[in-house]
Structures are given as C-alpha cells and as structure tokens.
Image (spheres, rainbow, N blue to C red):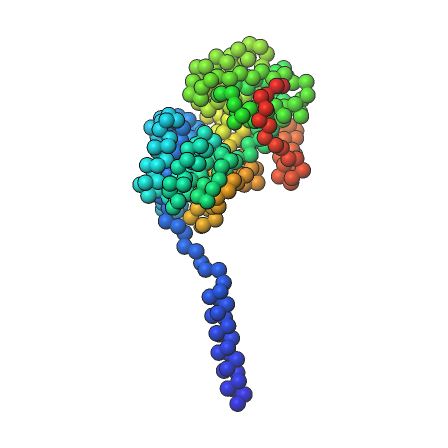
Length: 331
C-alpha cells in the first residue's frame, strides 16, 4: 500500500511538471531574417555609412542572414522606391540609416505590415516601425571637455555639414563640454552646406586656424575629412565625428565623438531575430555602447584623461544627464 502511494505521488508530480512546462515560456526560434540597409550616400568612402554596413556584415557572419545595401549614391527622390523595393523583395527588416528617412518610413510602413522598418536617428514609431535615437550628446560633451583642456589658445572651431536641428544639437553638446571645462573659450562655427565636399571642409578649417583655433572639430561626414587634413597640415588638434581619425591624421588626431553605428545596426538585427524589437523609439547611449569618446592621442596627459573619465563615470552613473539642445548654436 505504501509503495502504491509513492508511485501515485510520483505520477502526479510528473503530470504537474508537464503541465507547468507547457504553461511556461516557449523557447523562441530566431526569425528568418533578410535585412536591408538604406543609406543617403555611398557606403564606400563615407565613415557614417561604412560603419553601419560593417555592423550589418557582422550580423550576416554571426547569424547567417541575407543582407543588402543600396550603395548607389541615391538622392532623396529615390528613397521611397528603395524602401518599397526591398519590402516587395521579401526583406523583412529594412533599416533607414539617418533621421532623414523618417517621413519615407512613415509613408511606406502601412503598406507592408509584415516588414519591420527602422529609422536610425528618427523619432517615429508604429506597429511595424521602430526608431533608435543615439544619444551622442554624451560623446560630444566628452570631446568638448577634452578639446578645452588640450587647447592652448582657447579658440576651438567646428565645421558642420548643414544647418538644421539634427546638426545644431550635436554642435551644442560639444560646446557645452567646452564651456564646462573652460568658460572663457571662444567658439568658431561654420556650415559647409555639404556632406561630401572635403575641399570646402579644408577651406573652412584653414580660415579657423588663421583666426587662432588650435582645435578643429567636425560634424560634417566626408566634408570633415578635409577639415582634419587642414588640422594635420597646420599641426593643430583635430576631432572627428562618428569614426576615429587616427589613420588619416595620425599626428594631430586628438579623438572622436563616436557614434558606434556598427553596434547599433548589429543590435537592431539581433533584437529583431529574437522577437524583442518593438514598435517604439529606443534611446541608446553610453550604457548601450551606442556612443562614446574615441581613441585619444597618446600625447594627452594622464591628468586630463582622468578628468574626462571622471565625467564619463558620472554620466554612466546617472549623475550627469544631458538633453539634446536643438536651438541654433550661439556660443
């Protein structure tokens, strides 16, 4: 009788365990993914686009997904057709690399409910529409602090691509850092009116250097490469946007305010495959490894690095929070 009760208890326990496992979370199978990256310019020759594509290539290697990129130098009039073409071809994840794709994504997404659209730098969302805001005000601020502490003249120049809110907040974040470290610093800001004109970037930087700037910063994509060349030739510090300048300007590349687009794109693909990418706006910063201060020049003194690192720690600990200031810079 006693053995019979034991057998019965074991049987009940097995039944309960089976029921509980049936009610528990199912092991999700990663989604079959075809991911397309839409850029506003060429992938080759532009660090902004090249870095995003590197992230997509890494996802392809790690996850075995099919990928595509429109490396054709398209204009804004082509973007809607490109979005629709990729969705029609069965790409179930279409990533627009830049805030300027927001309107296109909003227009196209309702026509393809089985495709997830993502806008990097946008603030739009819907059931199948996601945006990722990279909080590069933090990396810009850190670069500004470093620039102020390394400048001897106290004159710090910035070459920007275009005027507009998307650029204004970046320039503002940089000079917030500059002024926090050196309130008497002088700012020189110029807009090139182009993302892909290194000669114009060089011309503007030369003018700033002639006006006493000994640090040249840029938010100008390929145009900024010309600014860095001018800094290298003049022997003044250069600070790059998005991507390190240590290869192109090894003598004077002070650092860069990085946006780690490779990490951002990779994480988007990973979250999509795992079924975790929601139709909302994500805000990714230092903690998500979406932004950061780049490699610093070996000539930066340890005491200055310590000051910059202390500020970064405050950011990570939540003691220093920064908003994106979209007003026209007036420093």
